[in-house]
Length: 299
Image (cartoon, rainbow, N blue to C red; front, side, top):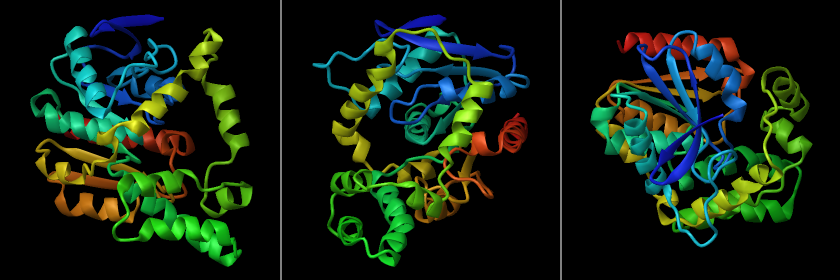
């Protein structure tokens, strides 16, 4: 296992492909998911490009965040830049999934000269609008089935003066079951397990590694900048931007997609049909081809 010292923290990373090819930086979601489940896709993309994939500070194989330490989105974005310096990479293309899409956008905004392009994969750009996308997807189901408590919980997400944190907390409090997951086209757990068993090697790590994400997620959800609306930043990115979103994704909803289409210069949107939040798992070859085509068009 490879580690790099970033700001005095030991960060686990993986490297695929050849270094003189365009470099893609995979930023995992969660928050706290780790880069493990992206292994197969990183290998496939590594046949064409130089891939860096890592566990964010405080996640899985990377050094844990002490309970007394505060952290926020900007802290992790700054660590990404320090990683670029440590790995001696001149420029790269951030590819952020879900929460990683927030990191990718903020990094591109803060360090425009360090990117060649940026790819957003079902991104979370605004906690408020993600909460409303989730509410729009789930409320009809609760109304059809007269689930009064959940109707009340979700309906308040649409209130004009609700805070982003309150809206997001409510969205995260929705009670999911198999019927709701099926209604929202969420990936079947058995299919996801089969995918992991086939393509994702089980790492030999200590038990505490699997639990680190709990503290990481809690700290991110407690940070003020997680609830900031980053959508306006899209207009400031001059390099090519690609938005990949599943047809049924409820993290990057119609509002965010329309904002990107309207305000992102050099922006391209690709909606993958019959896909939800994990498009790289549901359509791996299409996903690889899409990323490959975009990156090659930028060079």
